[in-house]
Length: 276
Image (spheres, helix red, strand yellow):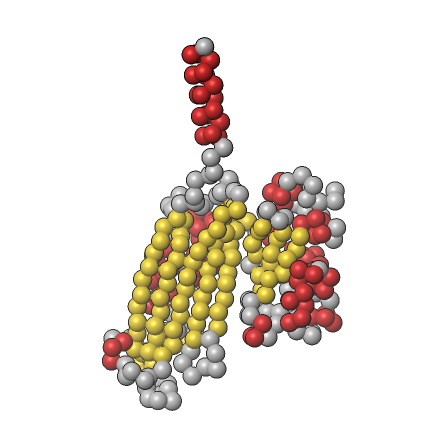
């Protein structure tokens, strides 16, 4: 009797362990902050030759060895627009030091201490933040950048998404899910036909209603619980500045009626995700 109870208890504990949620995706947090006063060699700003720049970042980055070297390099490009950096620290330091400091790769300004700025003097800034979210075996990195140039009418902001497959340690591209060469007209149809994209349709530039196709963005994220691919268009890509960043939802089953899904896409979303 005791042996039966013990075996039952051990089996229950083993089952409970198997049903535990996957461990959180391990990531490193980095934070740095630098400020500059910039003096132009050949430019004179409206209030004199000095202009302050405030650059900062707070980024979540994958632990060493989590991604393949190729995926790590692509993530650096997606986050910092740096295709030559060999590490996060190198790319981040370059971004902090060089943002707005170069004009056609020629250095035109010198940096000094920010506390020499007058309290009412305008300044430019660039702020970059990075978060991530887990969806099954996928991790999506979200890199947000907000910039403002002194004397500009308004600031600008972007949100770049990069989807990473934990099983393969590789970045997922839209081409891994569907043939993007055929996707342009389908995106436009999704905007016009699907209620979930009504807000995008109301903001859409009129020119897209006549050309019959939309350029496929690099940014997207996946909602596997709802079986949806969400395409992300930056400010001005589809609509005026006032409408902001636009997200176009492509439900997988609806998408499969218009384009064939790749084997990887079908495996990712599971049985019943497509009409074939």
